[in-house]
Structures are given as structure tokens and as C-alpha cells.
Amino acid sequence: MGAELSFAVVLRDALEADLASFFDFQRDPEANRMAAFTAKDPTHRGAFAAHWKRILSDESIVKKTILFDGRVAGNILSFERSGERKVGYWIGREFWGKGVATEALSKFLDLVKTRPFHAHAAKDNLASIRVLEKCGFVLSGEDEGFSNARGEKVEEFILEPA
Image (cartoon, rainbow, N blue to C red; front, side, top):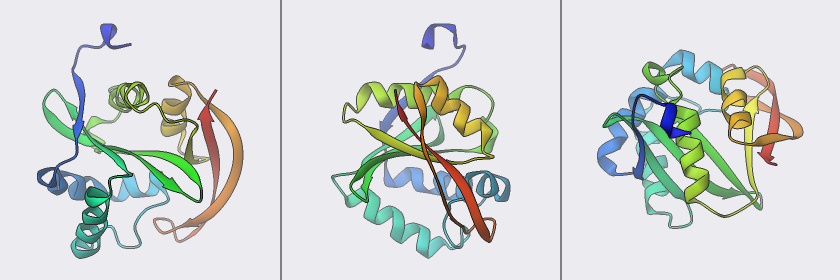
């Protein structure tokens, strides 16, 4: 996949130094609306810091920073929730539409061999669903949950690798 790309997407361990960029990405209202299932208050620095302190200290979570041409472009994680291995990612809006999420997820799936993975995406988050499909995920179910970003219940797709 990387041969046709004109940029470099690299995954490396997430560092405390990356958190300022992650927080900036999280505060973007458009990104929150699209992601739907977000922090109650994405602008609350203390809650963000406590959340990421838990993530960084939890050895069971695979956490990577996504670099695009050497710049922090987002993060990608694998974690256990409700007895299932989940995968999630967040890309800064300035990096949308450049293939960064697809390349990062592809590399992450090569790196993390635990299967199955489950991913959740709001049904109207077409960009994220397309990224998952390009990386071999298929629809495996549907659910709904309360969206903090939208203030209402939102229907979602559950996807996993074929």
C-alpha cells in the first residue's frame, strides 16, 4: 500500500510529549461531531490528562502515535472493553483526506497480531467506515449509544477484519 503514497506515515510508541497535539485534535468541534463517541467535555484539559495518564500507564493497551512526514498527525489504540479487543484512532483534521488514517491502520494491523479486532463507527461517519473497509474490515453488527458530541443517541456500525 505504501508504494503509491507520496508521504511517510510512521507509527511509534505514544509519548507524553504527544499529548499537546492529541488535545488540540480532540478539541476540534467538527472532529467530535464526526467521531460522535467522545469525551463529555473535549475541552477539559484535566479530564484529558487523567484519561491519557491511564492509557500511557496501561501495558495492556497498544498505543501508537501516527506521524505524517515527521509531524504528529494522530493516534491509534488497541484496548480491551467488554471482553472484546477494540481498535480506535483519531486523526487531526489537517491530515484528513490524505490517506493517513488508512495507512496508519494498515500498519497497525500488521504490527498488532491479536484478533479479532472490533471497531465502532457512527453510521454517518463515512470517512472512518471507508478507512476500515479499505483495511479489510466488514460489517459485523449494529448498535447505538449516547453521543456526547451530539447530545443524542447515535446509531453505529460494528466492524471487524474479514
